[in-house]
Image 1 (cartoon, rainbow, N blue to C red):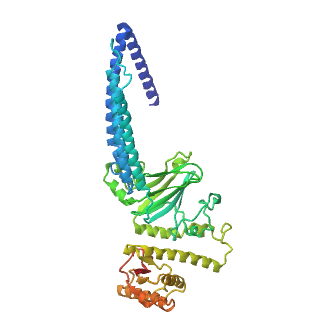
Image 2: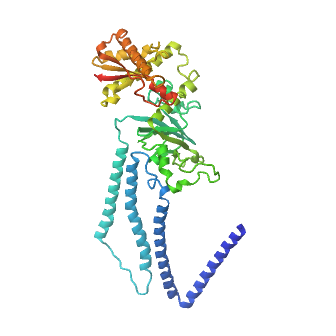
Image 3: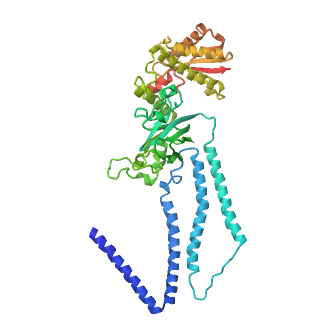
Length: 502
């Protein structure tokens, strides 16, 4: 078959050469000028045919592949700001498309219309002010419009607002993306490139205790509807942080940190459902495996590198999942058990706190707890939304099945005493909550007793005026997570303080 194909190609070449020779001979017989005019005429017609077919091909191919292209068909942006970016691209395509189509049509039409003819002379225009004004002012106006529109979208996308956001860090290296999330304190710790080691890939400064609960997941998981700020940097060469479905794309530059802000508005499952009815995505994801899922079923968001950073550039891919807030909270809680410091650094030679005794370690931990607690109190006091004027007593615990406070709960309660002393007008409702395991009546009674235990400690041990406090048990009536799994039930067993007046 290969020999037949090669021989066919050779034969076609021979035929073309013979046609050229016949054309050359016939031209000589008719005369050079007549042959040239005939050639010009034929070439002009070919050019008109070509540009017609070319433009039809451009439009037809765009329509045919629209369901594969970002911004068209089912591939609408999966982030809030991406809609504006797509609109900007479409506006740019509209204006540049007009110029492209017009110039191509004129170029090929002029090649046909102004072909050589005996006796025809060119009209030479030395200067035409009006024409120069038109072809200078019109493009300048369009460019100004496009630039201003682009700046407006950029400023809206990257606006520095006071909205609550999740901050993560992405570091590119040959050939992988390193991802870092803040832990329970919601703060990324300081780092220094001089601290890069095999056991410290981010160069985190372990003297900064904010680093101690940061974790490095294998995939990026983010909640739908929550603003995300991504710190972007590189360890070795130029990379590019690209989340195409969210219209996020930013260079990762060694020594020059950058960032991008976006808000996902479509979960992975919702995007799959969007593709479910599209014919192009009904094919097998692996044509060689009849048991493989369909394309829409196997769809995943991904982080890629959009910079040619070396031979292994193609392998810089990270899975990205967008989930509901409840699922995200459960994922973060599970990831915190894999925090980098306690699992890879604590107690080893690079641990600056290695020589600390148990008492000092407890003191340090309590200091961190107190700082985080006071931040949550201040945030709740400053909040305008009633739902945000609540702060959890995360470290207030009880003995199993009872309302008796665990011994280490005193540290959190003493922090609450200090907060109430610092804000003498602060009044609180102490709310007890349980999961849905057991009898609802018993759950309500238990939550009431637990809220009263906190109330009694604050009044008796903390000398807080009882008029400033109210103990209420809600039982299992106000869950914050699903009771279908142990992690969700653990989150529902909680004690909260709601600010009623300050």
